[in-house]
Image 1 (cartoon, rainbow, N blue to C red):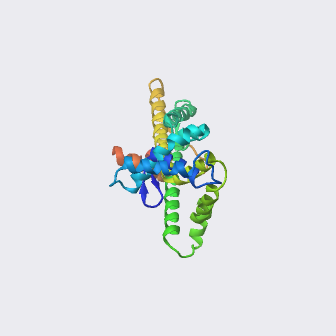
Image 2: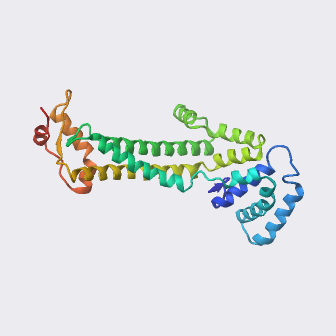
Image 3: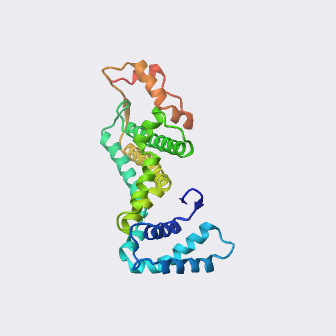
Length: 279
């Protein structure tokens, strides 16, 4: 992960570095927690262990690693916050499990032996995937806006201003970071700084979880469909008060286009769609 604009750290090194920054740069000095002598001690050890040719990032990581030897035993609450992980194994297991259950439940909720083409549970999966890709597009837009605000000095136009107000502007975030750095306890400052500095990391993990959940949802619905097909004879059809066969044929042609591209199975013709209409 990146800490600052130029240096890059491994996640564990970055966590230690943010803990140290929250104790050194924030609030009134607390010599009982971290004194100038402690700071000189950590710097001296970093000089010895990092080596003369070490990069700035390596030296800072070593300094923070040594600092934890004194900081964390002195403040157990800070040690607990530093060790806490929001993206543990539970999150990675819960997302696909929930997707499988919801996918299977959606298929079971369809019930019966008749598959309604215009009201099939598969449309829930389509809607979910559209939501996932909309989220990805929104995240990309946010990154574009933030980069534009950081690189350019011109005033934001109406569209960029609207996006910044909806997604959070870079200027207000930077100002809030300064305020958080000088207020609250070390634990609060660490949590605030870590949450802000790891936005790209958290966004990437959230996107991955969404992808995994979407794939599990589709697998769950497919498994439910095949499980019911073992003991039931499916019938396919559609019925609508407002739509006629040409409109339904157009909808199905568009909706099934990705499946046709993968499987090579031809889309139903207009006469076939008309024949599937329920009386």
